[in-house]
Length: 249
Image 1 (cartoon, rainbow, N blue to C red):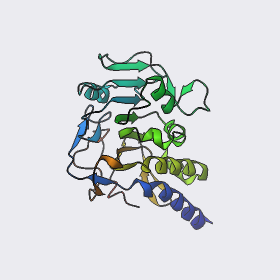
Image 2: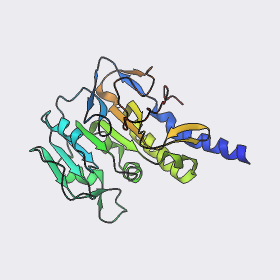
Image 3: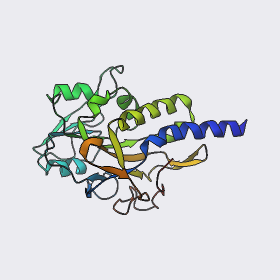
Image 4: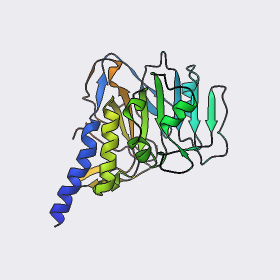
């Protein structure tokens, strides 16, 4: 019985992880945006012509938002858990609003925000999403043609220890497939404020940071990096990084 449960959990975890195989965009350097440690993210250094950025989830940090704004990009920010931004910038546009799907009262969808801001015809935007678990419903129900409007997506996914649960794993797999229909993963990083948890014998961080780039940006090849990459930083500098290896399942 225990072996059967482990085998099922392994299958469920890998069904989510396999679409997230990392790639490299040939000839494109990487850059870290945001503050050191927690709040900073590795991205591709491809910001020319970006029409707007969306930042879902703020808490007490807008360092990534600032690095986007100083590149001349207006950034539309949403967080229903705060009363004001940590600081202001002329290119910041914040609204006290939460993000989920259209079945959750009082919450907005990614698609509705794009329409509200007049970006429905934009095709070169950036998305950052760190909304403490609400990302699963938000991204599962966002049409891929909406996600494809973003040339890069920075995302933190939470509660990966629940991948042993079939319903959660099904939602997580749908999110992974939705994202990778139009994008390749280009960076993975474990948030070491969370714990490692074995799911079907696979050690996974409970929270994982992903950077994705749209497939039509150029030539992609499978990555040979070992993660965390040398250009990344631990979220918590007081403890060791989470070793993820090549992240190929």
